Length: 101
Image 1 (cartoon, rainbow, N blue to C red):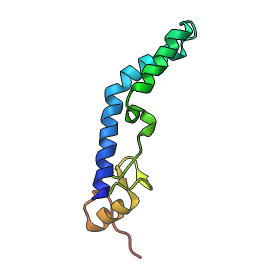
Image 2 (image 1 turned 60 degrees about the vertical axis):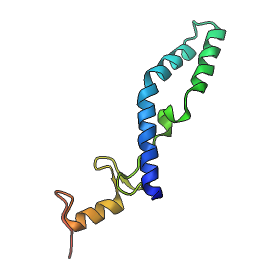
Image 3 (image 1 turned 180 degrees about the vertical axis):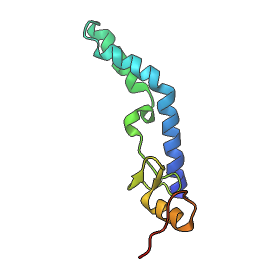
C-alpha cells in the first residue's frame, strides 16, 4: 500500500515540476541577472520561495514503477533490479532469459 503511495507522490512531483518549470526559470533568470536592481532580484527570490517545494526538479527521485523501490533502479526499464529479476523469471520481460548453469 505504501509503495503505491510513493509512486503516486513521485508522479505528482513530476507534474508539478513540469507545471512550474517556466515560472521557476524566469524567476531564476531575474535573480541571476546582476544588471537588475537588488530590490527586484530580492522580490524574485521571495516569489521563487513561495512556489511549491515539490515543483523543484531536485526533489524528483527515480523509483520503480512496480514496487516504488528507490534503489537499484534501471532507467531504461523504469524498474528496480528485484522487479526486473521477477519479470525476467516469469518470462514477462521481452529479451530477458533466465540464466542457469
